[in-house]
Picture 1 (cartoon, rainbow, N blue to C red):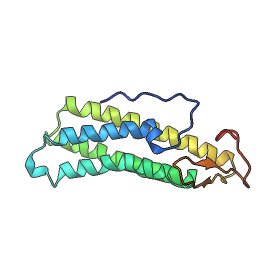
Picture 2: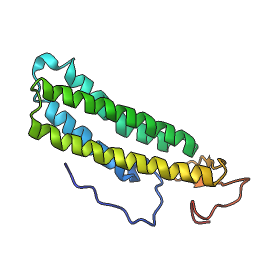
Picture 3: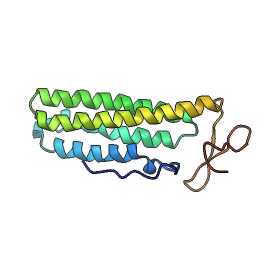
Picture 4: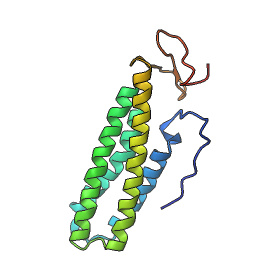
Length: 164
């Protein structure tokens, strides 16, 4: 898998494209496509498709959640991504059990899914803390540009979310 470089910790994500977990899950999709291209043609509409769909759903749900208006909604889409991750892991194990995927091919995928799972859980937990610490009133004002700025509670600036 490709190496994902970390952004400096002091910069807040302004887009889903800035999230390391999204970048890593995109690389994971590429690897799923690479490995499923080796499956028998008879599986084109079977296990091949069933592996690709949840793989694509992981970064898609991360992106959609980042585009929502609240931390609570973002966490909901991260939960959907976790469900797709479990679905994908199950199907990879099935592919291994029916000898479409060797053990030495399966293990890096399982390891990659574990990393993505931890990153999603960590992101979700940080959003939950923000949500609880701010009294569940953090909303984002939509702007014409892709940059979003928190409006805070009652329109007041919140220092720990973004610079004022």
